[in-house]
Length: 167
Image (cartoon, rainbow, N blue to C red; front, side):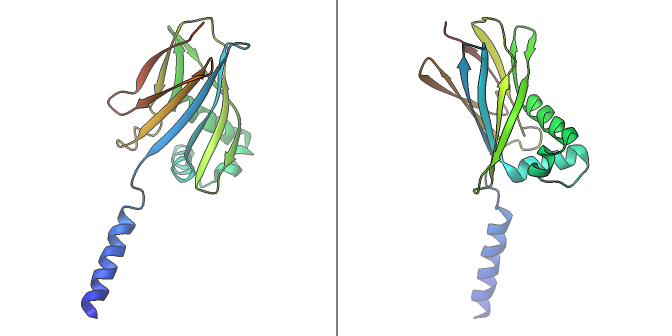
């Protein structure tokens, strides 16, 4: 019985150490040719994002409380803009936070729209959200345009992709 107890607690301890087996975020954007912008969302771990936000601001808050505080909401927007950035040549295209939704599965979706950009054929995307903190981080982005979907993978070794906007 003693051996079984030791085995049980050893397995339980091991499982507890690997409670966070992966680091992942997902973004879906759709090109809107009426506004010459992207509209979309970033889906990520609420826990990981709250941890990052609290470290950045040296505070202890939740996403829902932060979204109701104008200063913390601005900080959320800055974190998202530094972790997912768009540029056209040397011109940065900023994300404008539109809202959020916390899901029961521990994920949060931040909805956004980018600033309008020129009729450019190529946009550089850098998607390195959480990669400074978690080197195993994987980010995926799905681009929807003209009823076609294309998915891109971003890893620590390749944080940027050049995408083509179809006329």
